[in-house]
Image (cartoon, rainbow, N blue to C red; front, side):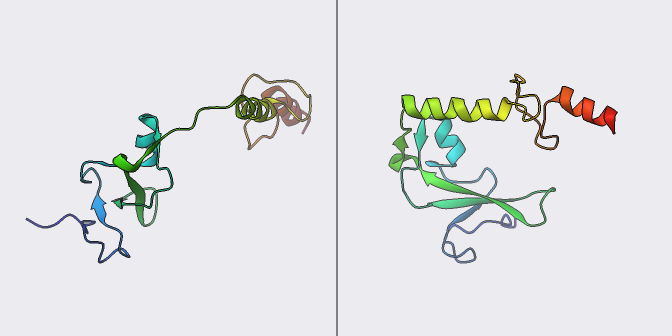
Length: 125
């Protein structure tokens, strides 16, 4: 039986970082997204390992860094100032620059305006 393509637990072939194939990482190592789902963050720790896999969409291999869960820290709580800044930023993404109305949805970046303004511009052209 042959070894999986990205099997390098010592890190010899991948710059000293232990590398594992998709779904073959040892227990206790999680990606940022997996840590976040558990209410944790890496907390300044170094990358413990990485997972590599081939993707049909990208030319080369894809990589996700892994962190040790025993060194992870809890996610910092949302402060009122941070919540206000986030609400303001989201409101700006919903406000149409032409009609100045809140569209009620995030404006498509390829249009740059709300859908009624984009339709009006398309009809005028």
